[in-house]
Length: 447
Image 1 (cartoon, rainbow, N blue to C red):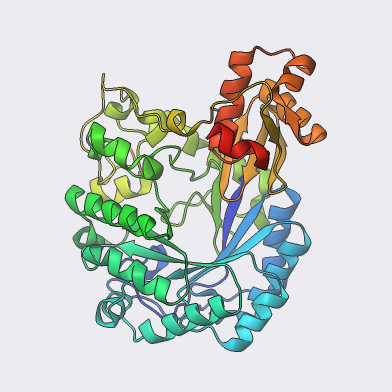
Image 2: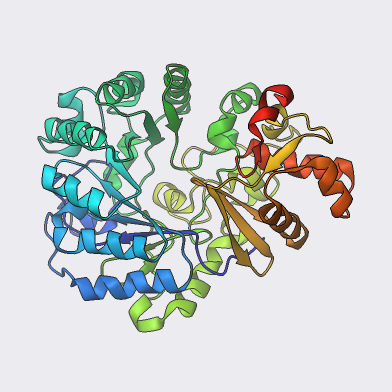
């Protein structure tokens, strides 16, 4: 497997404090004392401290930083300055929040620093369900904040952590979010934290997961953008279901310690938001030692034996290792949504049905929204939230497309030593996944 020189994205936790105490909370430190969820941060750090941590991300070409917590709006004294610094360095910067504390002044400051996105936790359309999960009276405040963010023209999306408390409210919650002005929602099945024994009661059955995904597809038909923010075990689904839910399954393996990382408020590095294990401290051990320590999360040795023989392991990635630790007591155990390995059934390939039919006169172009980052193996190409690894040959061809702007396939074949079949396959994948664009005059003819 390719090893990146640094992660593509990082979550920077700026506080352990939160105004909510969600039943599904992933902040492991909330469960360090028996049954007690902390609501304050006894070790709050200075702006200078967080600027050092952010500086490490900038120096190592991390593309996106999400400021999170706890609740980041409890640290207004550092939040906006960190977003501004990330933006000035050319990073994408977002905020993960429950929204309940956001004021109109906060929204003005978010616009001033040009924040790229906000992910707001919306747990139900029903105030009683939302407030019951959050253990607070926050539904009205969160709703008001969402409406104000939309009114201000900021890019915001809702995330609904789906548990046994709200799994049957996905459609209603999405339509409620649309009524507030949002056009994007994620519904993510809950995963357990190893220190939170109560999380086992929140886990969905496979039937409930599928019902939530079916509801997301219905929401998509109503015109909203939909997503799931964590990878799902493919073996939970039949072949027909893997085809139906392909957009939520394919190219969704775990990115912990591979293309993502989390930095705790004190500078400790963790592979993901669920993990309790640390892989060094950025300020004490330095970047290289921490990133090298995270490399073990790429190892197939972490997977259950059955996963190694599964036809879907390259796409699925073996599910979530931290959730496996929480549910089985072993990091090599089964993801809680796993069933049996898929052997001899093949893997559903979704790209082929969406690839355009290309002709020598078809005009393609490298879109302005796309960008690349050099790697030892070639490069990573980005567009929006998606990315793709390319080897040296693929990188060379992509550089050609970057340099030439709009160009026909015929011209590419004249200038580049590549067969028509290989070229159309390569370009078809890039186009279908959004990393390459068809000239507007060509779109209708090839679709």
